[in-house]
Length: 248
Ligand code: GLN
Image (cartoon, rainbow, N blue to C red; front, side):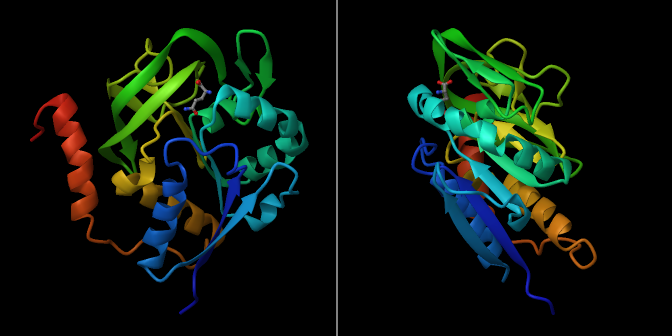
């Protein structure tokens, strides 16, 4: 049988790496490894050229405003390439600061960071930070699923006509007012949820891996072999029960 392999591009890990975002990469790798799927992670520093054609998953983590400003200066150089990659169904997972940078802009008090315009969203600075645990309800692969995480952002994101990743059940989400959290568009997921997000939400992790494999192996890949997720789901359900009350 053909050996499957995914190449994960981690963009700017020295700058965009808040609250254990690197744990998301480890979760992607482990869940592949447990199924005999090979992974390679390529870390791109600010000056590294990026060949998006060689990537199956692009990961952008969160960052402080100062770090986002540093990254923002380089985004123009990758804007066309990443938009082509996304149009071509490339898989992207972007957390918080990285998610904001997928939009048209992130407006700070004194300056504005121009984003990649991969998503038709924009982010303004709010008056106070939105911090705490989050529970959202998503629909992944046709099934309703609760996803948990932790948010800490000053920016308020408005998603226009995009489909949100989920509906907020507990926490603030995109802007604390419209009840939406994140965006799901083609094979792109943007979200405010740190955690790290993926270890505690195996359904979401597998959704991302499946999308990448479908694109990389359209003729041979059908579905992921199931894993025993009892420990991961216990961690997830602990948070769901703590903030929403015991769920049946
Ligand atoms: N600096 C951004 C904000 O405060 C993103 C923060 C983050 O990535 N946690 O909104």
